[in-house]
Amino acid sequence: MNEAAATGKPVVIAQFSDLHVMASGRNGFGVDAAAGLERCIAHLAGLDRAPDLLVASGDLVDAGTPAEYARLRELLSRVRIPLCLMPGNHDRRKPLRQTFADHDYLEQCGDNEEGRIHYYRDVRGLRIIALDSVIEGRDGGDLDEAQLHWLNALLDKEPQQAALVFLHHPPVATGFSRMDRIGVTADSAARLGSIIAAHPQVRAVLCGHVHRSVQAAWHGTLLSVCPSTAFQAKLRLGAGRFEAAMNEPPAYQLHHWDGAALVTHTVTV
Image 1 (tube, one colour):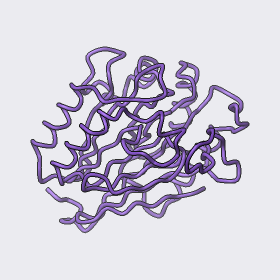
Image 2: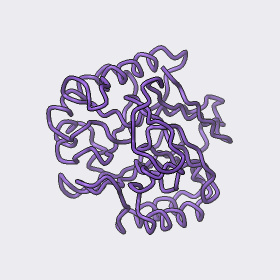
Image 3: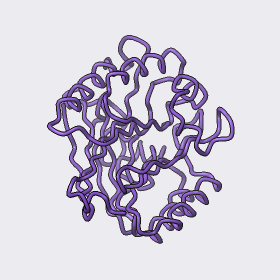
Image 4: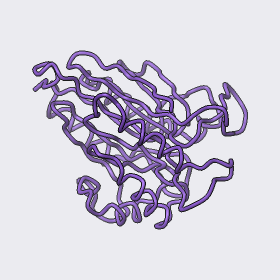
C-alpha cells in the first residue's frame, strides 16, 4: 500500500552517518565527534515536522569498543523518534548488539553475535532495507552470498512496495581514489547492481563511509552518500590522503518520499 500517497502525508527518513563516537575526548584530527552528533540531534529535534525514522548508517563509533558504544547509547537516548542502527567498518558487531540488546531488528537475520546485521522495516508503506557490508578488521567491504539472496527474495516478494536500500560502503567509484580503494569489492558492487536493476521499486541506494555528500545515477536508481555527523573529508578528486575538512560543519540527510518521488535534502548544522 502506498500510504504516503493515500494519506497525503509524506514519509521522511533521517539519515546520520559516520558518527565516530569515542568514549571521551577528540580524535586524531582534533575533532570532538560527540559534539557534532549532539548538534545534529538537536537540529533534528527542532524540525517543524519530526521524521518517521532515523537510520544511522555505520561507523557509529571509532574503534568498536564497549565504552564507545555505551557513550553512543547515552547520546542517542536524546533521539525522540524511532531509530535503526547499522554497522560500518569502524564498528564491531558483538559489542554493538550487546549494548543495544533491546533493538530486536539487529537479530532479524542474524544467527550469532558476530553474524552480519541485515534487516528490513516498513514505515507507512515505505520499506527500509539495511545491508551489512562490513568485513571486521578491514576498511573495505563486501556483501556475502546469503545476504544478496535474502535481498533478492525480499524484493521479489513485494514488487509494488517502494523501498530504500541502505549500506555503509558505496558500491560506486566516487572519484576520491583513497576512499574508492576501500569501498565494496567489485564483485559485490556488480551483483548488488544487478539486483537493483531488476527491481525498479528501489527508489534509492543510500550509503555513508566517504564523509561527503555524493550523488550518482546507478542501475536505474539514485545512489546517495550521506555526509558525516562528526566531520567531513577534504574533497580529493583523484589521489590524496584522507584529511578532515575543519571548515565544513557536521551534516546529515533527510529523505522525503511523497508516494511518487523521493527528494533528498542535505542538512548542515
